[in-house]
Length: 77
Image (cartoon, rainbow, N blue to C red; front, side, top):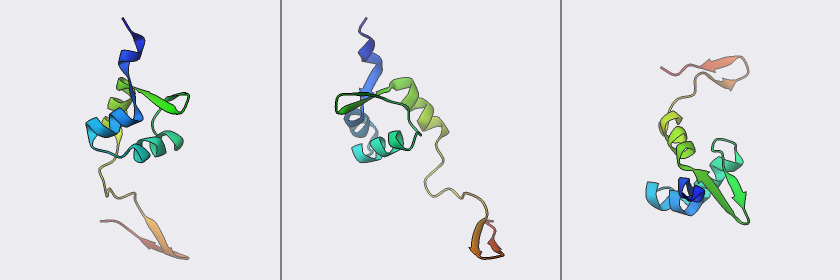
């Protein structure tokens, strides 16, 4: 069986999951998505993409307390 069948390119992920290719490569560069670079293309294991999708925070999710000014905290309700 072809081992590459378990991998998707950044372009394939972008097309199949309705995200931009730039977003996929940004996730790779930030270390949030593991990939192998083959020439100019990134290969991402299907299991790795599924892991990312299950563990990602929803868009617009709050990240906890933020500092507004020195000594003043904004607490997310």
